[in-house]
Length: 98
Image (cartoon, rainbow, N blue to C red; front, side, top):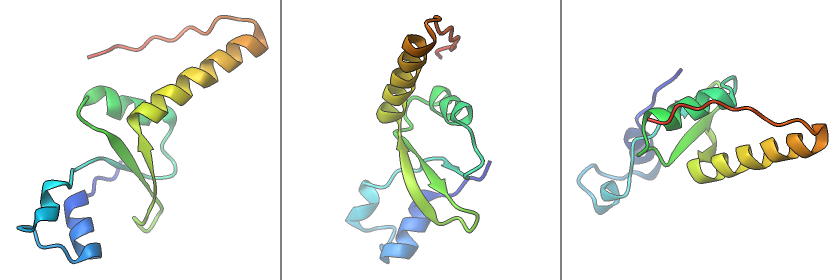
């Protein structure tokens, strides 16, 4: 999995000096490629509860979107419930919370 430092990337794109006020709002977050699975994203969020999002990048490391933690969890639950009602079978999920 690729790891980029978001602070450096934002500084380059926005010409923000490290000592500027903008640096107070920048957070380091994981970066994933388009081949990563939902399971990989879930593992990232479970490993560190402070991660608010994951950046989705293409093969050239250009950002294409954000996967927000709260929206990701909500969508996973909605999808699981949809499968339950369509199939009529309970969904069994085992997630170890840290």
